[in-house]
Image (cartoon, rainbow, N blue to C red; front, side):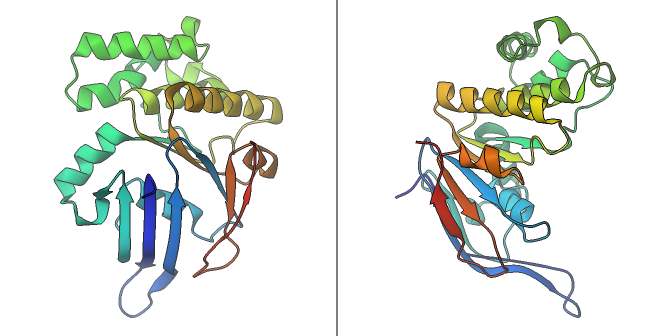
Length: 230
């Protein structure tokens, strides 16, 4: 059994009168420790797929299993606990809380998960140091560059030692040099921690440096895939 499996996955939005079908029968697997890239045109359903895989949204049909656990059969409370403990998310827009300092933003998932406040701050500080932000821990988000904010978001995603790391266009708003730095940091964290990672990106060059690439070409797709970095 693969670490992450989606079988017969379907997602439809909207009411009965004008439903919008994103996909109706989708299968995919991700092996433990793999870094998978998902590419494809805007509006094809890449972000929707990522939200389903991470339990941010529920499918209209089909099943998702992570390490043998059936996400689609979980209650809302069980799914919330699963997301907080097992999944780290990074988005194109970092969604940092403006009223909290960088280290507090990173510690937030720990506080939500009822980790000791000081322990969460200690761990957040260590992550920020690892990501090259030692001198920026006490800064507020509006005092950080775009690349620094995204590194804070990566640190926040890693705080709870997730099994699954999901990133939706994590370099989409960054210039080339900053995109390279952020991607290399994600790759380093992936390898160091033995993460299983799924990254949605429009950047074909970055995608090719992942272990495998799935290209979404049309709705109701099975997906074309090829191997990236060895």
